[in-house]
Length: 548
Image (tube, one colour):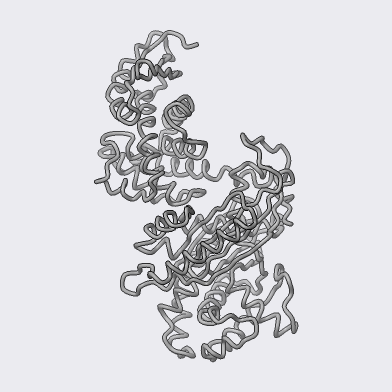
């Protein structure tokens, strides 16, 4: 059982719908090399989770078409079959929720989004595509769930099939999060054509890996304080396989679990030198080495070797917790089940939005008024005009805070610039479809309403999230109009739904009783068309001396 005592359990807020005791959650990682699932039993009152089942299938989504980079039909079918097995296992264990994320291979493939749509249509399973930085953040959460940091700096490295994540943290806020496009499957496919690998290919592979890692390592090292000596923690199948090889040779047995096992850079170099001299069949014959792992182990080992050399760290400690467990912890954070030590992590979405707002010199006083109006309109019309929940409310809030960030580039067409800056702003805590949704909500706060001919709108591959933009962007438009002069002229808005008249009345209270708020009323008149079209109601705005 994983007790989250290091996260603290004091002052837990009450959920609107408290989780039942022993809530079963299945977390799936759709990776470049494999699909992994961890099924956990969550005990909300502790809080803690117990891993009750694991499943792994090597599907090699990273074996993409050489010329186009597209996922192959064969790999996609293998993945779908593996996901069906995961669903069947989760159902057999009476899982209450299944959450899934996709990483490098799907992220980079031109048909990656279409593949996720296919999964949703065939299996009814929503798979969230996450960015490289978001992947690193969740790996960090996963490691924290299985290892005590004692406020000391730790470097974490996760070598996947398509990317390698490097993280620096001390148990609190991560200092750096990076994702580099080098992975065991990717490098093997692109750089290894000889078996055993030739000297020229091996040396080129080493040099390429070192060059690709240098920037991330330099950034990480710049965040270390003078005199700090971080501990290196390794996760993922590649590193665990190398640890298994090392343990068999040094101890004559493999510890179970591997958590906490250590080996040195010197020993790793010896293993790499042996692996490079073996052909595929000879590597596959190594005890504990699977056939599929033997194909890619050398490239993965070179990544680890070069990373350790660049970091100037002589030993590595294994942590068996990584992305899947991080997905579980992130889910628990989002359901307010972890407080105190990781409370700061639970607000990552909000803090990431504010960070971007500062970066692009957003007028936060104005944006916060717009966000307050937008969420007030959302709350007052919930269950009447729409059935969106807390997650969608938060996306609307984020869009409201960032709607004007495009002014950083230019006033002209700033709504389009806002879309671009949000889409590429590396927001943390959000899957890609939610970032796309926030960007589109901000893009449609003015001018044209959402249209299929717009590329930004077409980029939302989820019908649910398109509908969200259709229904919530009119609320953001009204919120912007309510602060038209950006001076806080309107203090409060109250919604009155008149079903008998098929209209929605906005009762407005002015901050200054002597202000007629003519510009705000005019702006509401200009912006009401999209609201009326979306909801089939007439919008009437009324300025009142006092609101009840």
